[in-house]
Amino acid sequence: MKSIFIASNENLHRELEAIGAARTPSIAISAFNDSLHKAAGLLSSEAPQLVIFDASNCDAGEFAALEKLTAQHPQTAFMLLSPDQSPQFLIRAMRAGAREVLPLPLDAKSVNEALERVVRKASAQARHGKIISFISCKGGSGATFLATNFGHALAAQRQKKVLLIDLNQQFGDAALYVSDQKPAMTLSDVCAQIGRLDAAFLESCLIEVSPGFGILAASDDPARSSDLTPEHIETILRLARGCYDYIILDVGRQIDAVTIRALDNADLIHPVLQLALPYLRDGRRLLDIFRALGYARDKIRPIVNRYEAGGKLQISDLESVLGGVAACIIPNNYTAVSESINQGVPILNLARRGAVAKNLIGLAEKTAGLRHIESKGLLERLFNLGQFGRTRA
Image (cartoon, rainbow, N blue to C red; front, top):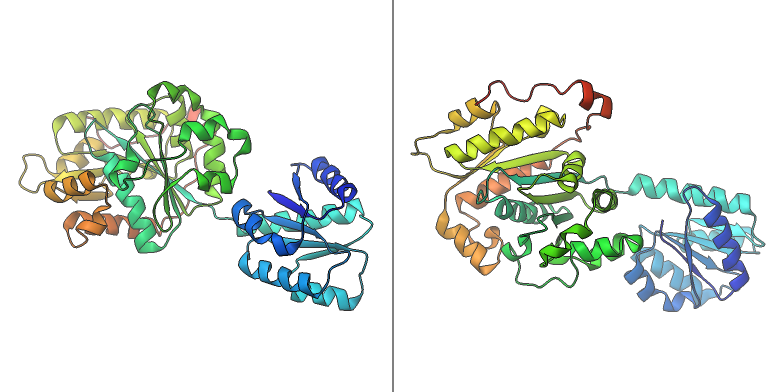
């Protein structure tokens, strides 16, 4: 939990630091030596979950500043410290939006109890974002185009807060599909500074495509792919779940320790393929890998891209080979899709009434009602791999 102490009393800060550090898990409490009047910029940039303020000499102006800050930051808990515990002071503090008012001198037990209440409330308010992975069955399937435009559709149509993480560390270019911005920070940069990772830092590293939709770009240097470890992706996804409604993973095509850890965390996996024999063959192989990893059958939902009704292979062929129904069918519209990619603009902004955009909106609508799918435990994965498809190719 990110916490800030606003006061000039260094001894009081040291006491709070010691109490926070003794907790499990610990709470780091940073000091800000100034008044509430000058804290607005700090709260906007740091986005702390808890603000502790030494209100020993709180006047009417500071109560007014407190009331303004609590209104601007409803997700932040404000805790006041004061030797004055009179009913008049407590009522005034409550009206200004303080969640806790603790007496001075500090009592460690009272502080710990108050911190526990704040932590519980913050946990209850936190998002539990769903993680959705897009993975190519074969190169050129269009998985990156679908992942980026699906993320944009979720944010634009459902007013969801969406994060897309480009996990293709060798040829990642997801941001180019929907934006012309150059990333200031990439996934490799985040991994290099994983110790300072919090919601504000993660947000600052994103390319903002549209309101509510940001992309954490892959590094443009393939040599830095080793910067990302399974532990890094676990840490990033754990934080992201609490900050975003949906986390979209553009996995690329490779299966390694990092992508497996990402897929383990996913609520849904969308293998993307086209109706051609090489795609169906590789799609079957990919499903065999997922079966060996113990992924639940209803976690895997293939998407057919660039579908043409008059082709030799039809949806029934896909269902026969893969043993399941496609989650979504994206029709072929080369002109609209190419224009979208070349301009770096979401297809909903260019061809909203086209079939591609409509089907992506439909997938977003369907996904928004998704319930969380529990991952299998280790023993189940070792001893009960289960059946993925009805038939094999």
